Amino acid sequence: MSNIYSVKQVNAYIKNMFTQDFLLRNLCVSGEVSNCKYHTSGHIYFSLKDESGAIACVMFAGQRKGLAFSMKDGDKVVVEGSVDVYQRDGRYQLYARKITLEGAGLLYERFLALKAELEEMGMFDAGYKQPIPRFIRTLGVVTAPTGAAVQDIRNIAYRRNPYVQVILYPALVQGDGAKESIVKGIQALEALGVDVMIVGRGGGSIEDLWAFNEEEVARAVFNCSVPVISAVGHETDTTIIDYVADLRAPTPSAAAELAVYDYRALQESLLGYEQILRDKMGNRLELMWERIKRYQMRLRYLSPQSQIREKRQYLVDTQERLRLGMRRQTEQARNSLDLYIERLKGLSPLDKLKQGFSYGMDKDGRTLVSIAQVKRGDMVTLQVSDGAVHAQVAEVDLVDWGQISG
Amino acid sequence: MMQEPKESKEESIAEITLEGAFRELDKVVERLESREITLEESFKVYQSGMELLRTCNEKIDRVEKKMLQMDEDGELSGF
Image (cartoon, rainbow over all chains, first blue to last red):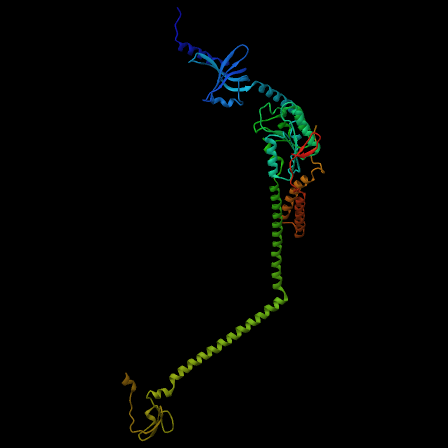
């Protein structure tokens, strides 16, 4: 009898086989979706089936970015992921990482093929790109008359510059007849002679945007003599006309920003230039005026009138100095005179007489200074403060004043 | 086939002259800043700058526009 294994052992063994298999780790499976359930946890449970059978599939919440559309039963999809064993149920299932609509894959291949072909023909070459004129009068728009794109373009164009004439060619942008309608629009606006053209539409699925991947549309854009800005879908959508257009805008709004110049900015720019011109000219003139004034001053200084005035002034100044000097001298003389008067006053004999001294004279009127001038009985005169005393000498004594005072 | 760059004179005088005018204005400013320029010349340059600005202002269409829609026959009508 062969060995007996537990369920756990068998499941683990099978799981190990799956895990080691190179193909099962990463594969793409195509089929039709059935039993599709979006669980509240964010996981998606579904089955893939074809005419032969079905395989259980799960896409965990963490992988949801791999699903770009709302998947429902009946969708033909390609699921990329790995096949692994769920040991609890002893079941294998496909763990999905990426789910794409099967049609989308085909379209993408067509997109790549056309892109390669047109690139080969040089239709994307930078040499064919026309510059987008900055200051336009008329803007042509080829897009659907309904929807966000036309409103966005209208609002932004009007906000930036209400004086630019926007002309819409209401085109069919998806479904049958879309490419013919877009081509006709491009040609009609070119014939009308707009300055710049925006060709595009708002966001949508790859099928919705498909008209902008058609060769006829790409050629119409390429052959258009009016510069074309492409504006298809969102920033992440790239279509063939984005490569062919003279400029690619990420969205219709952005296209309007690129096509229509800002009126206020232009106005400010013009005013700025005016200011700069005035300032520069003003500065230059001021500089010239300064120079002229300097020369004027120097010339005035050097003129004969100035010379005469200068001399006259010198004369006046000198006169004044002379006058002042003279006055100073007179005052000084008067001062010293006053001083002498004071001093003389101190020396006046009258004052001495008032103090009790008297002035003696002999009979001949000579000043009496020595006993030798008189003898007893001689008449002398003593001058005092209020008159004279006539006296007779009674006695003469010799006194050595020096000895007494010493 | 290569197309002529769209610089056709009749169609877009305004745009050409506005862009050209800005280039010209830059030159005028540069010339005015130059030290070598004579006073007389600077007057001329200044005047030409002012003239350019005046022309620019005249070039700008200031009539408000409503969006127009083109029909199958190429006729235009309000959108």
